[in-house]
Image 1 (cartoon, rainbow, N blue to C red):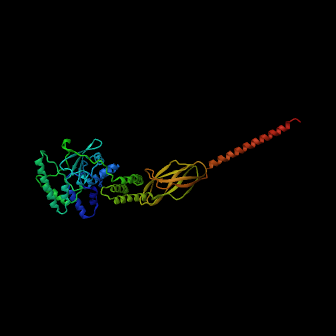
Image 2: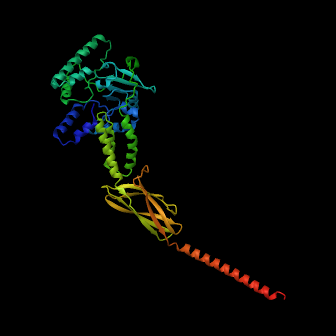
Image 3: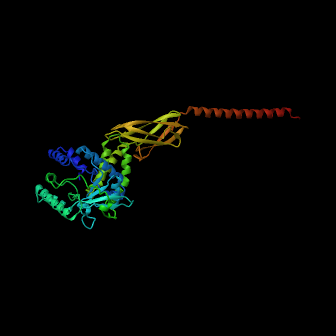
Length: 441
């Protein structure tokens, strides 16, 4: 089982021995079929239990891309090699991503009462009616492969000899014309020692009775397999981390919308998320990865700010408010500026703006005044996606005092009212005077 994360580390290393080791692995496995594995080692059963299938799928694709680029051949999803016990949730996840057969290493067989027979294909039924072929690698060969008391040549020779004996025993006890394959792996499926593998390949390739096969051949009929029941209990090892993800993943998605295309922080956050869920990560390491993500998110979100206070005077019915927004980060970011007021209207209720690095930017906000006076206006910054608040709401005062048309209307109305009262009063006095002149004595 090739771990793409390890291959990538060897590729980017400046050490000559790492470059040579990568060349050795590439030469060693050049003619063999490679199984697709996630970029970082993930436990599909634990992932499937907490509903992080999308994370697993992304990491599987990333692992395929890395392996294809560094090994010059595309890995296959047909067979998956596991180092952890397989549950029905994990089997369903793998089946949905294109896996038809799973090879369980000795460490993955611990959930069964006894190790699986490496010469027997097993068929597991899934809860939705589907099925998955299961194979087990031989733990005895794994122990020899990892026996550091023996030289690489001694280990390879002993394994080859035992394979020949096993083949002869099967020939004597089985009527099958085709010899079943023997599955070899380390206890976890990882390449523990390249020198051992090189010696083993050399001996088997020169043997007249042994030969490598790319992967197990799926039986043509289910009758040639044995049924096997996968563990019903779920793998709960990621439940606590899932609760953290439920809060962190939306924050990552919202904050990512602030970044411009090809910003490396998006890949960094996704890699740290996957690394925190890796089967090889300790609780302390997972916590450190989560803390690193949270700190990076906080640094970006707090780098943008509004002024602490501001007041504006509007000189007409249609005006602009110039609001200064600061970006203290070392890269350009995008934010959404929202604004509201009970007494003023805005042609746009928000703007998505790009803020250059390490600078302050004046943003023009078009506003329509409906009356004179002093009115509160509220501004706030949000992420472009998800409308996650980046700042507290800023309250400013806008003073409107130059609506001349409104003053003329008020003055004209007052004059008309005054003239109407004067005319009415004059007619009343004249009427009374005339009445007094014509009245009889």
